Image (cartoon, rainbow, N blue to C red; front, side):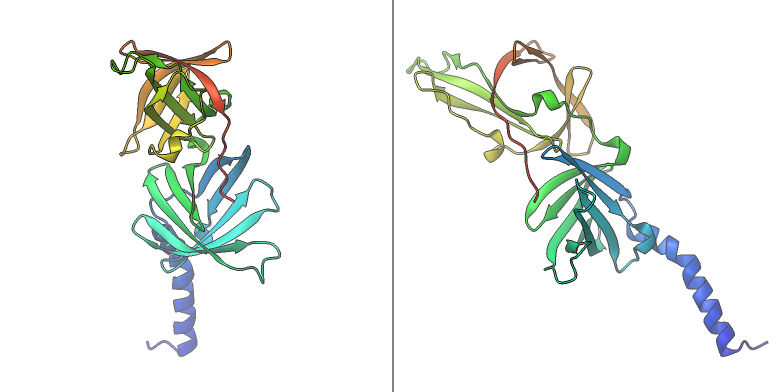
Length: 246
C-alpha cells in the first residue's frame, strides 16, 4: 500500500527523533560529558551536552567557578579536536564571540584553549588529585662543585606545581654569591600532568598512563623530594603562582 505524504513525513520525523541520541553520541565519541579543573582556587566545569550535539555541531557549557559566570560553546568536531566559538550564557546576546578549541589528549583529559590561553581539564570524578600544600615553585639548595673552574657556580633544580594539574621542572646553573632570584620553570620547560597520591608524585606520559616520579614530604616549611634510586632534593618555596584562563 502506498503511504500518503503526511504519513511519510511523520515516519521521517519519528526516525530522526529516534536516531538523534545516537548521532549525538557519535558526534562526541571519545569525549566525556564532564571535565573539571581548578583555576585560581575555583573549580571550573565543562559540560558537553550530548542531547544538543549532532555530527555537524557540538554544544557545551563552561562554568568558570561562579554559577553566574557561565559560557556557551558551539563548535564542530574533527578527529580528537572540537573548534568553534563561545560567549556568555547570560546577558551575552550582544557579546562578542571568541574562539575556542578542545583537544582530547588522553582518555580522561582535554586541553581547552580560550582565545589563545590554555587550560588542562580532567574528566568528572576521575580528576587527578593534586596537593594544595605544594602548589607553587620550589627551588633546591645550590649544589656546588659542578664547575671546577668556578667553584662559586652551582646547579639548582626548580619545580613548579600548578593547581590545574600541570607541572614543569628544570635544572640550571646559578652563582652562589648572588641573591637567589625567582625563575618560573614553566617559562622554558615543557608541562606535564601530575597527581599526588599517598605521598608520591606521578606524571602522565604521552599515552596518558601514570608513572611514579618521587616521594615527597614537607619538613619545616621545606619540600623534600626522594627518588626511587636514592637521589634526594631539599627545596624551599620560591613564589606562589596560579594560572588564570580568563
